Image (cartoon, helix red, strand yellow):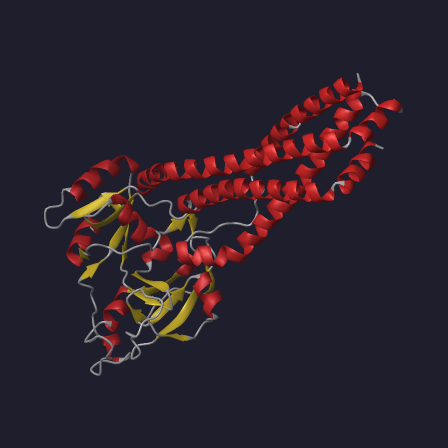
Length: 412
């Protein structure tokens, strides 16, 4: 009976109820959206790389080195000589070293020059290794391995030919048309910037830039003539290092930072990530405060609607009192109405949020390199939903007490 009466009452006041529902749905959308994006972005950044003890690059800011080497965001200030890479790799404390070379692109996706060690030692998430969905790693100079998103978005398959472009612009007129690459492998989805990267050999990058003059293709070399040449890069962008023992991390880092032949910087990815989130803390707190203020304003709107409805329903309430309805029954009726509005608002707000994330997921991933899942019901979001329900029910007590006292005074 109580539920039927609450539904009938809400239907009778549908105009004000719809406005309150929309206001609450917007506040829930903002609150859950900020929390979900914050949590997913942090998780996405944290899961991008694991098992790498040090990242080495030309001396620059720690965050800049982390962003361009791992997340493909920004550009390096300088390169590392190949001789320095060989020296660092030959250190007895170094277990493996992965050279990275950036600078070219293909239709807005970054091209990474590296070695086959990349597919063997690079890991993400919780020590998860890279796996091939199709094909295998590059074995020839003009082979390319695609990330899953590159293959999906551009519709590439094994055996297709790809023309790389000089620079990282989405639209480029400096194409290496005379030296196409053949797709030999497609990596499984990782939810990291690896999905948006084309992987080629260091020799492949050297080959396409040999005798290359701006937008003009080389006429001295073709794809076949390079196979007999030893193409050794003169410089690379960064190095990922795995050490024999974690205990030696600080010693190796100090030796690299004091490297006399070249100005180098070695960073620990975990420490750099922590520094990044410390810088983002102010922005996180500001967004969270805004969402809380939106939620509070929506709660105050519901309170005003309830107080107004109680005044409008004084005859209805008086009639319920005449037929024996107790103050507790009336209180439960008001609380049930608030609960129904809240449940509907949560369903609407979370549904719109999930739909918005689904529509913008590809854009966020391609633009910012972040994977934002559409499942908005995580542990933290459920906690916020419980907090929203509790706060709204408590706030709705005030208009009932005010309205009930006024009705009592008038009846006397």
